[in-house]
Image (cartoon, rainbow, N blue to C red; front, side):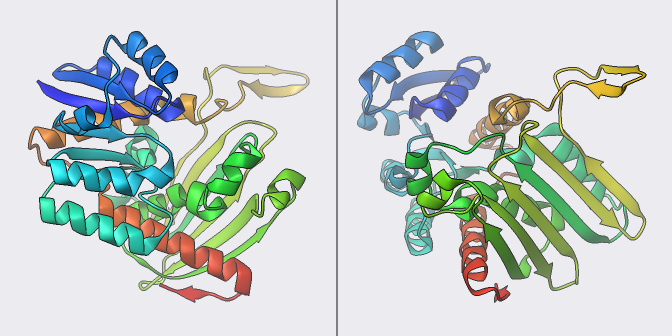
Length: 324
Protein backbone atom coordinates (compact mmCIF):
# COMPACT_ATOMS: atom_id res chain seq x y z
CA UNK A 1 0.00 0.00 0.00
CA UNK A 2 1.43 3.37 -1.05
CA UNK A 3 0.45 6.54 0.79
CA UNK A 4 0.08 9.55 -1.51
CA UNK A 5 -0.91 13.06 -0.40
CA UNK A 6 -2.30 15.76 -2.68
CA UNK A 7 -1.35 19.43 -2.40
CA UNK A 8 -3.94 21.59 -4.11
CA UNK A 9 -7.71 21.30 -3.97
CA UNK A 10 -8.45 23.16 -7.19
CA UNK A 11 -9.58 21.78 -10.51
CA UNK A 12 -6.55 19.63 -11.35
CA UNK A 13 -5.97 18.64 -7.72
CA UNK A 14 -9.53 17.37 -7.57
CA UNK A 15 -8.97 15.19 -10.62
CA UNK A 16 -5.83 13.64 -9.16
CA UNK A 17 -7.33 13.16 -5.69
CA UNK A 18 -10.39 11.38 -7.05
CA UNK A 19 -8.27 9.16 -9.28
CA UNK A 20 -5.96 8.23 -6.41
CA UNK A 21 -8.90 7.48 -4.13
CA UNK A 22 -10.20 5.00 -6.69
CA UNK A 23 -6.89 3.19 -7.25
CA UNK A 24 -6.16 -0.22 -5.74
CA UNK A 25 -3.02 -0.39 -3.63
CA UNK A 26 -3.06 3.35 -2.91
CA UNK A 27 -4.13 5.21 0.22
CA UNK A 28 -4.97 8.87 -0.26
CA UNK A 29 -3.13 10.27 2.75
CA UNK A 30 -4.90 13.64 2.77
CA UNK A 31 -5.49 16.95 1.05
CA UNK A 32 -3.42 20.06 1.78
CA UNK A 33 -4.47 23.48 0.57
CA UNK A 34 -4.27 27.08 1.78
CA UNK A 35 -8.05 27.19 1.34
CA UNK A 36 -9.23 25.00 4.23
CA UNK A 37 -12.82 24.99 2.98
CA UNK A 38 -11.83 23.72 -0.48
CA UNK A 39 -9.50 21.15 1.08
CA UNK A 40 -12.25 19.94 3.40
CA UNK A 41 -14.78 19.66 0.62
CA UNK A 42 -12.43 17.61 -1.58
CA UNK A 43 -11.25 15.46 1.33
CA UNK A 44 -14.84 14.59 2.22
CA UNK A 45 -15.57 13.64 -1.37
CA UNK A 46 -12.54 11.36 -1.49
CA UNK A 47 -12.92 9.79 1.94
CA UNK A 48 -9.77 11.27 3.44
CA UNK A 49 -8.81 14.18 5.71
CA UNK A 50 -7.31 17.66 5.55
CA UNK A 51 -3.60 17.74 6.38
CA UNK A 52 -0.83 20.33 6.61
CA UNK A 53 2.20 20.55 4.36
CA UNK A 54 4.51 18.78 6.82
CA UNK A 55 2.16 15.81 6.89
CA UNK A 56 1.88 15.85 3.09
CA UNK A 57 5.64 15.62 2.64
CA UNK A 58 5.76 12.90 5.26
CA UNK A 59 3.42 10.66 3.28
CA UNK A 60 6.16 9.11 1.19
CA UNK A 61 4.75 10.42 -2.09
CA UNK A 62 3.01 13.65 -2.97
CA UNK A 63 1.06 15.04 -5.92
CA UNK A 64 1.74 18.77 -6.33
CA UNK A 65 -1.26 20.42 -7.95
CA UNK A 66 -0.98 23.83 -6.34
CA UNK A 67 -0.40 27.14 -8.21
CA UNK A 68 2.75 27.27 -10.38
CA UNK A 69 4.75 29.69 -8.13
CA UNK A 70 4.74 27.04 -5.37
CA UNK A 71 5.94 24.08 -7.43
CA UNK A 72 9.71 24.47 -7.14
CA UNK A 73 9.60 25.24 -3.40
CA UNK A 74 7.40 22.22 -2.77
CA UNK A 75 9.63 19.91 -4.81
CA UNK A 76 12.62 21.04 -2.76
CA UNK A 77 10.70 20.45 0.47
CA UNK A 78 9.79 17.00 -0.78
CA UNK A 79 13.42 16.32 -1.66
CA UNK A 80 14.50 17.30 1.85
CA UNK A 81 11.94 14.86 3.23
CA UNK A 82 12.88 12.05 0.83
CA UNK A 83 9.37 12.16 -0.64
CA UNK A 84 8.59 11.04 -4.20
CA UNK A 85 6.93 13.73 -6.34
CA UNK A 86 4.39 13.97 -9.11
CA UNK A 87 4.25 17.66 -10.07
CA UNK A 88 1.98 19.44 -12.50
CA UNK A 89 3.69 21.44 -15.23
CA UNK A 90 5.51 23.73 -15.24
CA UNK A 91 8.07 23.20 -12.48
CA UNK A 92 8.66 26.95 -12.59
CA UNK A 93 8.51 29.75 -15.14
CA UNK A 94 12.25 30.49 -14.78
CA UNK A 95 14.72 27.99 -16.23
CA UNK A 96 17.43 28.78 -13.67
CA UNK A 97 14.99 28.09 -10.86
CA UNK A 98 14.01 24.80 -12.50
CA UNK A 99 17.67 23.76 -12.74
CA UNK A 100 18.22 24.47 -9.04
CA UNK A 101 15.10 22.49 -8.19
CA UNK A 102 16.19 19.52 -10.29
CA UNK A 103 19.61 19.58 -8.65
CA UNK A 104 17.96 19.29 -5.24
CA UNK A 105 15.86 16.35 -6.43
CA UNK A 106 18.94 14.63 -7.88
CA UNK A 107 20.95 15.06 -4.68
CA UNK A 108 18.10 13.53 -2.70
CA UNK A 109 17.62 10.72 -5.27
CA UNK A 110 13.85 11.15 -5.21
CA UNK A 111 11.45 10.08 -7.94
CA UNK A 112 10.23 13.17 -9.82
CA UNK A 113 7.54 12.92 -12.49
CA UNK A 114 6.13 15.93 -14.35
CA UNK A 115 2.47 16.02 -15.38
CA UNK A 116 2.62 16.03 -19.17
CA UNK A 117 -0.61 14.07 -19.30
CA UNK A 118 -1.02 14.06 -23.07
CA UNK A 119 1.70 11.41 -23.41
CA UNK A 120 -0.73 9.07 -21.67
CA UNK A 121 -3.76 9.70 -23.87
CA UNK A 122 -4.58 6.31 -25.45
CA UNK A 123 -4.79 7.70 -28.98
CA UNK A 124 -1.59 9.73 -28.75
CA UNK A 125 0.22 6.82 -27.08
CA UNK A 126 -0.85 4.56 -29.96
CA UNK A 127 0.36 7.17 -32.43
CA UNK A 128 3.74 7.23 -30.69
CA UNK A 129 3.93 3.43 -30.75
CA UNK A 130 3.18 3.40 -34.48
CA UNK A 131 5.94 5.91 -35.20
CA UNK A 132 8.45 4.16 -32.94
CA UNK A 133 7.59 0.80 -34.52
CA UNK A 134 8.37 2.07 -38.02
CA UNK A 135 4.76 2.12 -39.15
CA UNK A 136 5.24 5.24 -41.26
CA UNK A 137 8.95 4.89 -41.93
CA UNK A 138 11.12 7.88 -41.13
CA UNK A 139 9.09 10.71 -39.59
CA UNK A 140 9.33 13.81 -41.77
CA UNK A 141 6.50 16.14 -40.79
CA UNK A 142 4.59 16.39 -37.50
CA UNK A 143 1.53 18.61 -37.13
CA UNK A 144 0.04 19.37 -33.71
CA UNK A 145 -3.20 21.33 -33.28
CA UNK A 146 -4.20 22.54 -29.81
CA UNK A 147 -7.00 25.06 -29.40
CA UNK A 148 -8.96 25.87 -26.26
CA UNK A 149 -12.71 26.53 -26.45
CA UNK A 150 -12.41 29.85 -24.56
CA UNK A 151 -9.67 31.92 -22.92
CA UNK A 152 -9.03 31.68 -19.18
CA UNK A 153 -9.77 34.62 -16.86
CA UNK A 154 -7.59 37.69 -17.26
CA UNK A 155 -6.11 37.23 -13.78
CA UNK A 156 -4.93 33.76 -14.77
CA UNK A 157 -3.43 35.02 -18.04
CA UNK A 158 -1.41 37.68 -16.22
CA UNK A 159 0.17 35.11 -13.87
CA UNK A 160 0.41 32.18 -16.29
CA UNK A 161 3.75 33.00 -17.87
CA UNK A 162 2.13 33.52 -21.25
CA UNK A 163 0.72 31.30 -23.97
CA UNK A 164 3.99 29.52 -24.77
CA UNK A 165 4.88 28.60 -21.18
CA UNK A 166 1.33 27.83 -20.08
CA UNK A 167 -0.43 26.25 -23.03
CA UNK A 168 2.06 25.44 -25.79
CA UNK A 169 4.44 23.80 -23.31
CA UNK A 170 2.23 20.68 -23.55
CA UNK A 171 2.69 20.70 -27.32
CA UNK A 172 6.44 21.23 -27.04
CA UNK A 173 6.65 18.17 -24.83
CA UNK A 174 4.48 16.18 -27.23
CA UNK A 175 6.65 17.25 -30.16
CA UNK A 176 9.80 16.04 -28.37
CA UNK A 177 8.04 12.83 -27.37
CA UNK A 178 6.91 12.01 -30.91
CA UNK A 179 9.94 13.26 -32.83
CA UNK A 180 12.31 11.17 -30.75
CA UNK A 181 15.00 13.82 -31.11
CA UNK A 182 15.64 17.32 -29.83
CA UNK A 183 14.66 20.37 -31.90
CA UNK A 184 17.63 22.51 -32.87
CA UNK A 185 15.71 25.61 -33.90
CA UNK A 186 12.34 27.23 -33.26
CA UNK A 187 10.44 29.94 -35.12
CA UNK A 188 7.20 31.37 -33.76
CA UNK A 189 4.71 34.02 -34.75
CA UNK A 190 1.81 35.12 -32.56
CA UNK A 191 -1.15 37.50 -32.43
CA UNK A 192 -3.62 38.80 -29.87
CA UNK A 193 -7.13 38.93 -31.33
CA UNK A 194 -8.98 39.04 -28.00
CA UNK A 195 -9.07 42.35 -26.15
CA UNK A 196 -8.88 40.73 -22.71
CA UNK A 197 -5.79 38.75 -23.68
CA UNK A 198 -4.10 41.76 -25.27
CA UNK A 199 -4.82 43.91 -22.21
CA UNK A 200 -3.31 41.20 -20.02
CA UNK A 201 -0.10 41.45 -22.04
CA UNK A 202 -0.32 38.09 -23.78
CA UNK A 203 -1.16 36.54 -27.14
CA UNK A 204 -3.98 34.13 -27.92
CA UNK A 205 -2.99 32.70 -31.31
CA UNK A 206 0.34 31.25 -32.41
CA UNK A 207 2.04 29.17 -35.07
CA UNK A 208 5.36 27.53 -34.22
CA UNK A 209 7.83 25.57 -36.33
CA UNK A 210 10.42 23.28 -34.76
CA UNK A 211 13.37 22.05 -36.83
CA UNK A 212 15.45 19.00 -35.92
CA UNK A 213 18.98 17.99 -36.84
CA UNK A 214 17.72 15.16 -39.06
CA UNK A 215 15.53 17.55 -41.02
CA UNK A 216 12.20 16.53 -39.50
CA UNK A 217 9.80 19.44 -39.04
CA UNK A 218 7.10 19.89 -36.41
CA UNK A 219 4.43 22.57 -36.69
CA UNK A 220 2.19 23.60 -33.79
CA UNK A 221 -0.87 25.82 -34.02
CA UNK A 222 -2.54 27.24 -30.91
CA UNK A 223 -5.58 29.34 -30.18
CA UNK A 224 -7.23 30.36 -26.93
CA UNK A 225 -10.61 30.40 -28.70
CA UNK A 226 -12.27 27.66 -30.75
CA UNK A 227 -16.00 28.19 -31.21
CA UNK A 228 -16.56 24.50 -31.96
CA UNK A 229 -14.98 23.01 -28.82
CA UNK A 230 -11.67 21.70 -27.52
CA UNK A 231 -9.57 20.96 -30.60
CA UNK A 232 -6.81 18.39 -30.03
CA UNK A 233 -5.35 16.70 -33.11
CA UNK A 234 -2.01 15.26 -34.19
CA UNK A 235 -0.87 14.09 -37.60
CA UNK A 236 2.49 12.45 -38.34
CA UNK A 237 3.66 12.08 -41.95
CA UNK A 238 6.53 9.79 -42.87
CA UNK A 239 8.25 8.34 -45.89
CA UNK A 240 5.99 5.26 -45.78
CA UNK A 241 2.65 6.71 -44.72
CA UNK A 242 0.68 8.81 -42.30
CA UNK A 243 -0.82 8.28 -38.85
CA UNK A 244 -3.27 10.67 -37.21
CA UNK A 245 -5.27 11.02 -34.00
CA UNK A 246 -8.35 13.22 -34.08
CA UNK A 247 -10.74 14.85 -31.66
CA UNK A 248 -12.90 12.81 -29.33
CA UNK A 249 -16.67 13.17 -29.23
CA UNK A 250 -19.22 11.94 -26.70
CA UNK A 251 -20.47 9.29 -29.15
CA UNK A 252 -19.44 8.06 -32.58
CA UNK A 253 -22.95 8.65 -33.96
CA UNK A 254 -23.15 10.11 -37.46
CA UNK A 255 -26.51 11.47 -38.63
CA UNK A 256 -26.82 11.92 -42.37
CA UNK A 257 -29.73 13.44 -44.29
CA UNK A 258 -30.28 15.87 -47.13
CA UNK A 259 -28.62 18.63 -45.09
CA UNK A 260 -25.37 16.70 -44.80
CA UNK A 261 -23.51 14.73 -42.14
CA UNK A 262 -23.68 15.64 -38.46
CA UNK A 263 -21.74 14.33 -35.47
CA UNK A 264 -21.43 15.21 -31.81
CA UNK A 265 -19.15 18.18 -31.10
CA UNK A 266 -15.65 17.65 -29.73
CA UNK A 267 -15.56 17.08 -25.98
CA UNK A 268 -15.83 20.47 -24.27
CA UNK A 269 -12.47 20.80 -22.46
CA UNK A 270 -9.42 19.05 -21.04
CA UNK A 271 -11.22 17.53 -18.05
CA UNK A 272 -13.32 15.38 -20.36
CA UNK A 273 -10.90 15.02 -23.29
CA UNK A 274 -8.01 13.77 -21.16
CA UNK A 275 -9.90 11.85 -18.49
CA UNK A 276 -8.19 8.57 -19.39
CA UNK A 277 -4.81 10.28 -19.72
CA UNK A 278 -5.00 11.61 -16.15
CA UNK A 279 -5.82 8.13 -14.88
CA UNK A 280 -3.03 6.53 -16.90
CA UNK A 281 -0.35 8.98 -15.83
CA UNK A 282 -1.08 8.48 -12.13
CA UNK A 283 -1.11 4.72 -12.64
CA UNK A 284 2.36 5.12 -14.16
CA UNK A 285 3.50 7.19 -11.16
CA UNK A 286 2.33 4.47 -8.78
CA UNK A 287 4.04 1.82 -10.91
CA UNK A 288 7.26 3.81 -10.68
CA UNK A 289 6.85 4.00 -6.90
CA UNK A 290 6.66 0.22 -6.88
CA UNK A 291 9.96 0.06 -8.72
CA UNK A 292 8.52 -1.05 -12.04
CA UNK A 293 10.43 -0.14 -15.19
CA UNK A 294 8.05 2.40 -16.71
CA UNK A 295 8.69 5.42 -18.89
CA UNK A 296 7.47 8.83 -17.72
CA UNK A 297 8.24 12.53 -18.23
CA UNK A 298 10.75 13.65 -15.62
CA UNK A 299 12.26 16.92 -14.47
CA UNK A 300 14.60 17.11 -17.45
CA UNK A 301 11.60 16.84 -19.78
CA UNK A 302 9.98 19.69 -17.86
CA UNK A 303 13.10 21.83 -18.27
CA UNK A 304 13.52 21.13 -21.97
CA UNK A 305 9.90 22.01 -22.75
CA UNK A 306 10.31 25.27 -20.84
CA UNK A 307 13.50 26.13 -22.74
CA UNK A 308 11.66 25.65 -26.04
CA UNK A 309 8.83 27.86 -24.73
CA UNK A 310 11.35 30.58 -23.82
CA UNK A 311 12.90 30.36 -27.28
CA UNK A 312 9.47 30.52 -28.94
CA UNK A 313 8.64 33.66 -26.99
CA UNK A 314 11.93 35.23 -28.09
CA UNK A 315 11.29 34.26 -31.70
CA UNK A 316 7.77 35.69 -31.66
CA UNK A 317 9.19 39.02 -30.48
CA UNK A 318 12.16 39.18 -32.86
CA UNK A 319 10.74 37.43 -35.92
CA UNK A 320 13.85 35.26 -36.20
CA UNK A 321 14.50 31.58 -35.65
CA UNK A 322 16.10 30.90 -32.28
CA UNK A 323 18.71 28.16 -31.97
CA UNK A 324 18.17 25.55 -29.27
